[in-house]
Amino acid sequence: MDLTDVTEEQVQWAVDRLNHLPRKVLGFRTPHEIFFGLSVNYTKQPAKVALRI
Figure 1: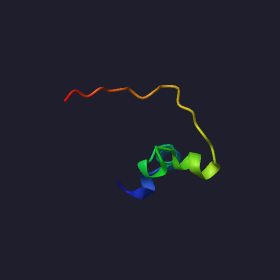
Figure 2: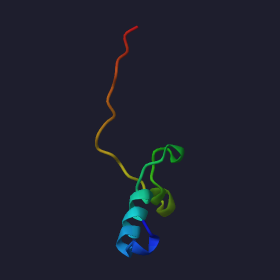
Figure 3: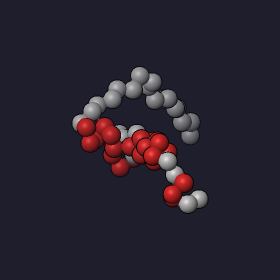
Figure 4: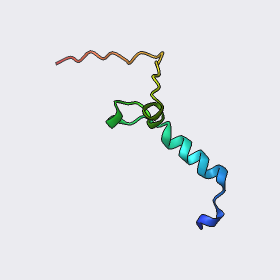
C-alpha cells in the first residue's frame, strides 16, 4: 500500500484507536485518559477466580 492512498479519515481512525487502547504501563489507562487527566470508572467488575491446589 502506498501512503498516498491513505485518506485523512483512515489516519484519524488509526490515531483514535491507538489513543483509546489501554496500556499496561499506564496502569491499564489509555493515553487519552492520561493526557487529558480523565478518570474512567468501569462498571464491569473483574472476574473472581478460585484456585484449587
